[in-house]
Image 1 (tube, helix red, strand yellow):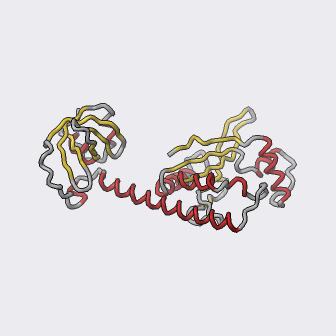
Image 2 (tube, one colour):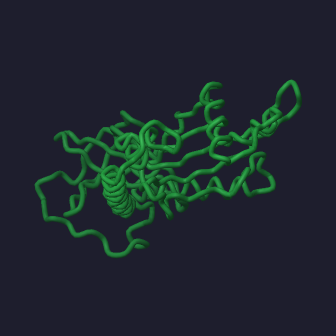
Image 3 (cartoon, one colour):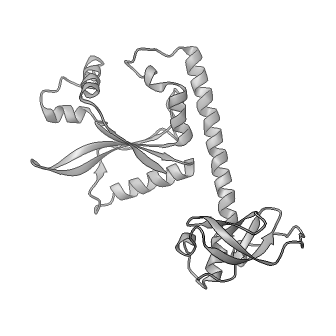
Length: 270
């Protein structure tokens, strides 16, 4: 997840947007600073980019749970809009929310509106590929039938790729499940390769909450799943692999090669 794309709308763009809303009869002419603020839900904005739709859903659900809690200092200025479940006619997909964030100022605490856009990387790429900003209402160019048809087709194709990414992630989760083999069902079937040593020393090259990757003396990279780390440290509860393994660690492992993957099961950690 990447949440570094934050911005404060420039005074010029903010004024242009207010004028456009007035011209389109969406708002009355604001006569106070408070009315201008109310007219601009996206004066402050942040874009959250997620790897896949399930990450996007998890983040949006967590945001809703937090902001609807009485103990949270933030709350929704209006009901969020789910353009993922119900895409715009153009094909646009995203989750939009406008939050009220309490900010201390020299005038006292003020509630500032912050627009949060939650997108997958491919949903964000769609906007770049279709030059969406050029075709928004009130912008210089107007979409024709050719543009609309292609934009919708591209959105549909990218949504299919997003679904494929989810399927790949789910498959990886199954292979790196922190559950013990007895809890997950039948153990994987070995491919019968008996030439590899049963025990080797492997160097950790990548680590995270669910699994680590390590390279053996023959240069082959193997997967260290969370369940194996859990067994090695004699823990019965769920664990984070990166709490026990760091990049560069040398670990004695048992090798298991199946039709699906090359596994390195740590014998002892620490």
